[in-house]
Length: 193
Image (cartoon, rainbow, N blue to C red; front, top):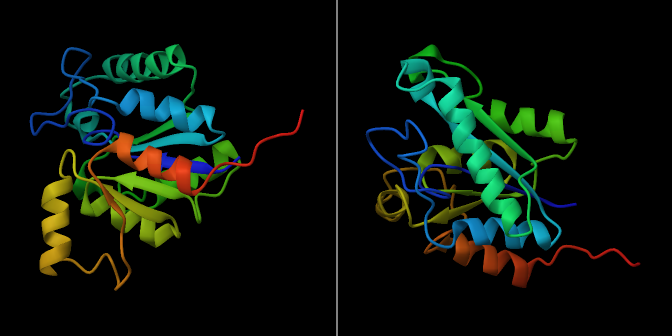
């Protein structure tokens, strides 16, 4: 099954400079849950790759993080889809770990645990770090304008970043728009029954 990798904050749910510390702070972006379910029903394996330094900073605990992820998975399942894995980096930027995006450790973990290579897979994000991680691992980066997406788009257009390497990065209003495009342009193979 083909793989789609999603960032979490700013792509699936509303982002906050104050961190998403618990279920009370976690608000899905309209249409995002339905988009994930549609991709899953369309035959795609769904993996989430997210930096969660708030855990390492002590802003929230593992219990709060797992409650958010359980709620996310449950909401997708209620719409007939599934998330196959959620992978997160708890480290602070100064720790220099390999898993914190733009590092590729989360993508390596996805490949190891799910048995599917993210190389060539669509990676939907809203930040330069997402796009850089995608490019570094051979994924196909897609930018959404939600979360930090507009600031990222402005940086790309002004030449403040070299993440594009001369290649065009598809840009969509939100995850719902990106999912519609993926399902129309790259339909997953269907099994004969």
